[in-house]
Length: 89
Image: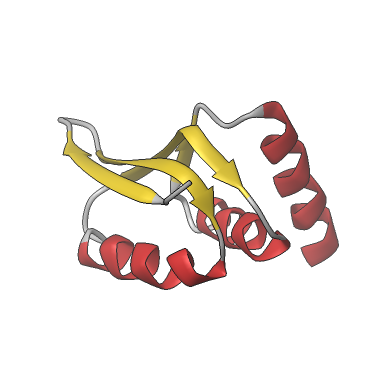
């Protein structure tokens, strides 16, 4: 399955809808898109994302720590992000 990023602008934030398999090669593209929006609150919607690889979860953990919101996060991904957060302390 491919990885897709769709952008939507809302009154409260820019929302990026992530779909498919997210791995290390997609992180760079997402970083570029997020950098272009750094003046606006950002939310990542993970409802249709399947995350593969530790790098993707580490990246999401870093983004959340930097203030980027994560919506519709699957329970297993949320648990993994929390584990990564504890490791960083």
